[in-house]
Image 1 (cartoon, rainbow, N blue to C red):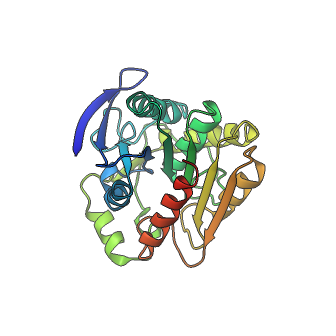
Image 2: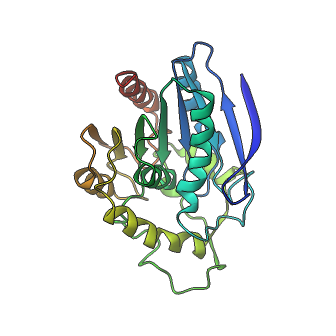
Length: 268
């Protein structure tokens, strides 16, 4: 069963959400998508989670796809974890007594890492995929960029997302993928990542850190550094040989989905 609706975030911005309810529910999962994309790109993952008894909550980050907000723009990096808190609070309220896990990919991985840092102990486990947690690969050059915040750059991420040419093609043709990204959004990664690094010790939640070794957008060293610096006692790191940025869309994705399910099942 699937339901879409708008939810008011902390500052009144309306976020587009989708909830898919598992028939035999055992837990819930919130998914945070990456830069310039949207929740529909996680349909295959959501379907697998549903089949395994996980109700799935997804949302579109502000300024992305069907959510409100200036296009692909953030005023402050805290908007990412605080928007996510709105969704997590909703999921926790509807599923009291059951575990609520958090999955974040790329910029959504930053959102999830920042959320768990700022609000520790509120997720029952965090899974990060190709998460931007350090900026070892200067994708946009040194930050902050010395350009007006409302300057928009073309989205040229497509080539690095996946080894499957069909996924790259679909990404380029997807009307809900943002075609331009603001300097304002990109520049917020500088203070955001600095804050995440300074506050590595307060990150104590159970965490599964995943990264493709051939990731052309976010350095796998980000995940290795993050993993070694955080305070979590229950932490697992997996670097996948040959895989690119979107490990959830690579040809071997179902094998990875099974690993996520097994990891969450072990923590129920």
